[in-house]
Image (tube, rainbow, N blue to C red; front, side, top):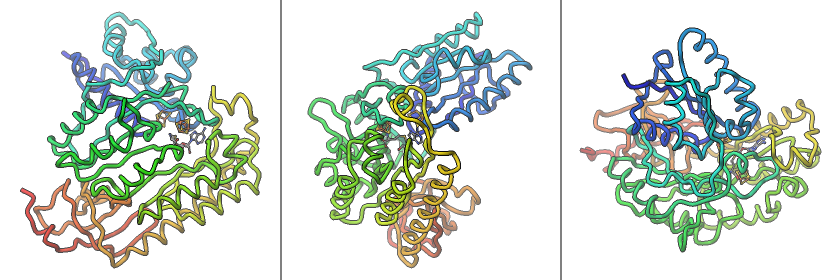
Length: 445
Ligand code: SAH
Ligand code: SF4
Ligand code: F3S
């Protein structure tokens, strides 16, 4: 009987992608996957370390594993960024863990799991590599409309608050050949939307290929309807990249542009390498090229941030009117520059209040922008059934807003790009009616 593996993924899309790599590596070595934890011989967690609550989720699951292990023999493995960041300390702190493997060690996983299963051997693989890109390991993906491709791994920016350079190591890019081959194979299997991934995706570089060239080449592949990318750093937006986003019909006119803070002293302490003015002129440059939707990330309550400095961030978010903003409380992370150099001195309650005010502000902005679309038609790539009802479709606009509408015919299917008339809006979702158009009347088969 092959060993059955249950895997749970936490964190960002890069971790989702890595889970697909792990599935591929283990399947090739005779393991099979199960969606039922109670059947599993191996329970894996692919973990995140970005904020304290990411750690807490994993501690919760390790508690469940202890209960499981009391009932029967099961091997528990912790993968990913938290494994890499805490290394031996995590393994020693919890005897339930048998195998600990960081993001660059997945090729060793089949062997380490086999040793744990057959000889009860504990092991860890947490060496970071300057070269590992898992080139030519085709991730094991379920069928669908969306797929992601990691084009580079690691980060050399060392923003002072961020643990990623320590959990993912140095920046390295895959070859364009390997990426395009993967994208072509996705197109031939019917995927319609590809998201290019990297911790610092737009610093992609391989011989004379930069990110703009790579993005365009992926978008040129026949069959691919939409291409997106995440997460870029504001420092790497040459005009060629902005042109590609503005002009290419299949590159979504949408950019996630993490701001982090709107005050120059805080930006400097964060090591973000741009000022408020630099960020503003980049946004102007983008918006001069037409209607390109922007979203952002913000951290509240970074070390020594005053009320006045926070208000600068608040005012900037108010002025820039992002389509969406992800707002986080600063969470001190082990190893980071900030944890070594600055005091985490903004009281928890102040952080919470700052986050709440920004979330309220952003809700109003998103809601206002979405309400403006009422009465208009938006093109939506159908991704599947709505969460709440199988009688409704769900998809996203090019600007990445969720759209939900009632199914009206029997031939429309996931993967179709269809016009939808917006009838109602909330801060997060557009509710629509399907527009009868020549496009919608063509039977996809
Ligand atoms: N590479 C991306 C960010 C990846 S992490 C970039 O450069 O923008 C995603 C977001 O998590 C970050 O943009 C930041 O807003 C937030 N984040 C990272 N470290 C954090 C920390 N220590 N505390 C709170 N939020 C953090
Ligand atoms: Fe972290 Fe900064 Fe790298 Fe983004 S660019 S992953 S925030 S260090
Ligand atoms: Fe988390 Fe690692 Fe992604 S820390 S956000 S899983 S790169």
